[in-house]
Length: 443
Image 1 (cartoon, rainbow, N blue to C red):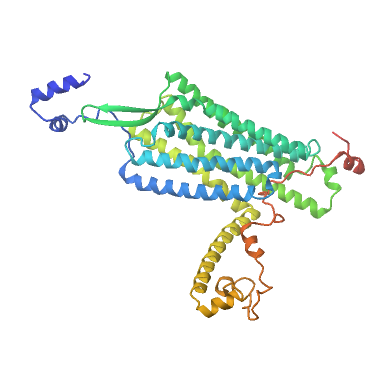
Image 2 (cartoon, rainbow, N blue to C red; image 1 turned 90 degrees about the vertical axis):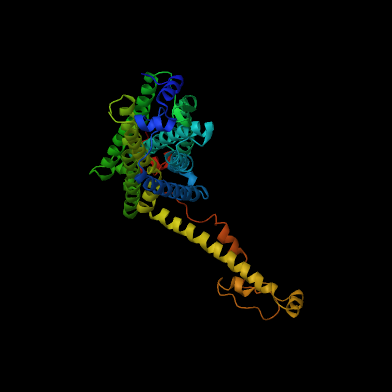
C-alpha cells in the first residue's frame, strides 16, 4: 500500500496519535531515503579529505610553479606533465571539498552550478590525465625508437596541438554531465522535512549505462593497454641487448652514451610508475560504477554509498601521487622543490627582519635623525646583518659592500638558473648534415 498525505491524515485521526507517536509505534522508515556514512567513519573520511586537499594543492602547485616559471616548457613532455598537474589540481580544489561537504551534510549546499561543475571537472580531469599519459608514452616511444624521424621544432608544435586536442576531447566527453546533473528537492510528508540532493537524472537507464561503459573502455581501459604496449617496447629497447640505432651512439663518447641511457631509463621508470598508480587508484572506481549501473551489487542504499565513497576517495588520492613520485625518483625536482620552499621561508624571514630593523630606526633620537639627513647610512644593521656579513657603516656614507640586487635575486630567480625537466628528456635529434657526416642513412 502506497502511503499518501491524505491517507496519513486519516490514519492519524483514526489512531488518535500524533505524527511522531505514529512513526514510532509502527516503525515507519523515512519516505525519502538519504544515504549516509556510518558515524564512526566520518572523522576518518574528514581527515583523509583534508590531507588529500592540502597535499594535492601544495604538491601540484609546486610542480606547476617549478615548470612554468623557467624555460622548462621548451621540452614537449613538460607540457603533458603540466597538464597532469593541472588536472590533479582541479580535483583537489573543486571535487575534494564538494565531496567532503556531501558526506558531512544531509542536504546539497553548493547550489545548482557546483552540482554540474564538480562531476564535469571530475570526468574532465580523469580523461585529460589518462590521455596526457598516453601522449607522453607516444612521445617517448618516438623519441627512443625513432630519434631520426622527428625534429625538435616539429615535436614542440605537435605537442601543443596534441595537448589542445586532449583537453577538447576531455571537455566534450564530460559535456553530458552539464545536462544530467540536477538539484532536486524532495518532500517527506511523513517526517515533514525537505531534502535537497544533487543527482544524475538520465532519460533512461540505457543511456547512463552506455555513458559509463564509454568512459570505462575508451578513456581508461584502451589508453592503459596502449600505454602498456608502448612502454613494453621502450623497455625492451633500453634494456635489450641490441639497439635499433646503435650507429647514433657510436658517434658519442662512452660517458655521454651512459648518461643518455640512464636519463631515459629514469624517465621511463618515473612515468611508468605514474601510470601504474593511476590505474590502481581509478580502476576500482570504474569497476564499481559499472557494477552499480548494471545492478550487479545486491547492497542496500547505505552500503552502496559507502562503497562508492571508498573508491572515490581512492581515486582522489591519485592527485597526491604524482608529486610524490617526482620527488622520489627525480633528484632535480627534489632539489628545486626544497630550494623553492627554503627560498620562500628565507624571504619571509628577511621581511620580518626588515620590519624589525625599521622599527628600531624609527625609535632613534633626534641627533641620529639629523645625522641621517646629513648622509649617514640609513639601512639598519638589524635588517641586513645576515647578508654577506655586511659591516656597519662608520664613515657616514653608504657601504659599497651592500648590494640591493641580492634581495631582488631572492625574489626573482635568475634566467640562467637550471631548468626542471623532471628527467623526461627529449631524444637526441640528428639533423641531415650530421647524418651525412657520420654516414647514417636518412629516413
